[in-house]
Image 1 (cartoon, rainbow, N blue to C red):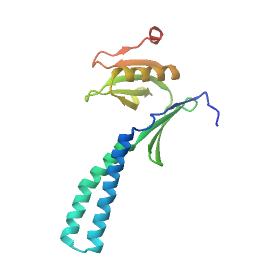
Image 2 (image 1 turned 60 degrees about the horizontal axis):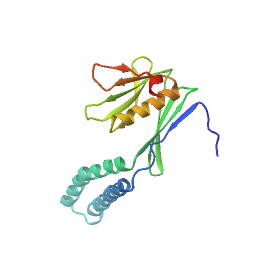
Image 3 (image 1 turned 180 degrees about the horizontal axis):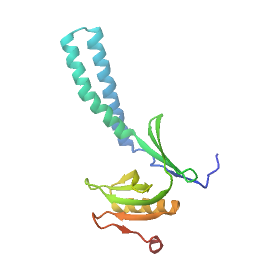
Length: 176
C-alpha cells in the first residue's frame, strides 16, 4: 500500500446503490439492442423505409438510454493537491474514467449555496471571482458539513450563501 501524503486531499463519492446500477444496465442494454436493430434493418433486411424509422428511433430513444445509463452509473472522485493547487475531478463509469484538471494559483474560500432547483451546492473559490463547482447535496446540513470539513483541511474561510443577498462568513471556531 502507498503512503498517504500530507499535501493531498481525496474525496470519494462511494459506490452506487444496487438499484441504480440495475437501472443503468437496463438503459445500456436497451441502447445496445437499438444498435443491433438498426444494423439489422439497415444492412441485413434492406428496407429503406424501415431503416430510416429505425435510425430516427435510435437517435431519439438511444440518446435517452445512453444519457440515463451514464447518469445512473457515473461517480465522481476528487483529488486536491495542496502543493501545486491542482484539483483533479475523476468521472468513472465502470472500468472507464475521465480526468478533468484545474490549476489554481491560490484557494480563497469555500461557499455553500441553494440553487434554483432546491439543491445545495459547494463551490471552491480561487483567483478573485473564479470558482469550481464541487458537489451538490439534497439537504443543507450535508452541504454544510462537507464545506466545513473541506475548509478546515484547506485552512480557508467558509461562506454561507444559502440566502440570496444575505451572505454570512461562518465562524468555524464556534462550531467545533
